[in-house]
Image 1: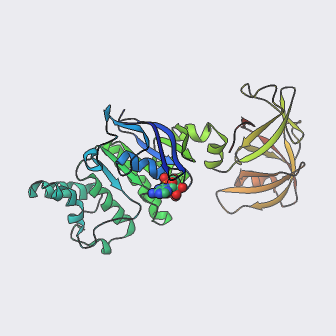
Image 2 (image 1 turned 90 degrees about the vertical axis):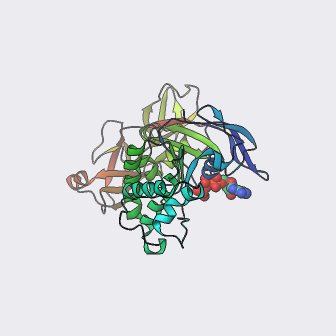
Image 3 (image 1 turned 60 degrees about the vertical axis):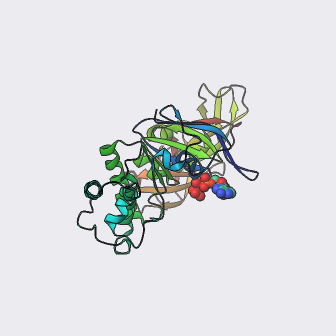
Length: 351
Ligand code: ATP
């Protein structure tokens, strides 16, 4: 285990930013701290970096207690959202800065800067100033600067937050590939679900100063541990159901209750992702939900439908273009949608 955070609590005045948080970061992993604004991601990252002091709890690095170590002694590389490059220094001087401060020999600095320029694919631009670079290039320089002194851990706080969508996408893939090459334990903060699911090999979903779930992108997306995670990771329909004799009723449509929902429950909540419906124009026994198309939007890789159900809830459905064309669907059509996959949560969860 590279980093172990144990029972960390942090308050600002009477506001609890982190509430008894524990986290294991395996050696060589690329971990995303994902959550809405104010959920405590940056505070956790800063405590791991040594830039913030926890009220209680400990931080270990490879079994060594670093809770009270200074940021400098922890040997972490840090990349912030805003490039924070030195404007009056060239690219090469920026990258070599940390080594110069440590009074490394000039030849060693030169060799390391050359190596890093190659890694960030900016060879030939070493004499430029930050003002002469694009946003994406500047962020790559910031990363090279963080890597120069060979940190034990790399921490990135919304590293692509200030970049436009296309550059962001390109840099995500680049960071993923870079991590595959370096295999350095890295944590990055993001509030962008797609970014976390695409780049990280482990995702930590945070909410109101607590960790809701830790898992691979596949686990957190397909097996969300709480309604919050379900909502936060992509669009989802939520239906409140009544429970009778082992069946849950979505409107008047009965569906089998899974074993983990108590037979004594009176109500439950079911979550269904929009793309996990089959759609027909004719009923399919009593397994489908019936409704009328209120709105449809065929512009995009999938066709998005808003269906007003018999019991008044809107059902958001996404279907492939071919299915839309085959059924020749139009606004006002009656349709039957059958859930292919559902997730149930008892009503004692709070979102
Ligand atoms: P964002 O995505 O907006 O950066 P975050 O999940 O990273 O959010 P934090 O920056 O960790 O959230 O902040 C968590 C909470 O703690 C927020 O409500 C914030 O206002 C509060 N907070 C953070 N730092 C301080 C501080 N120095 N003083 C007072 N409150 C703070």
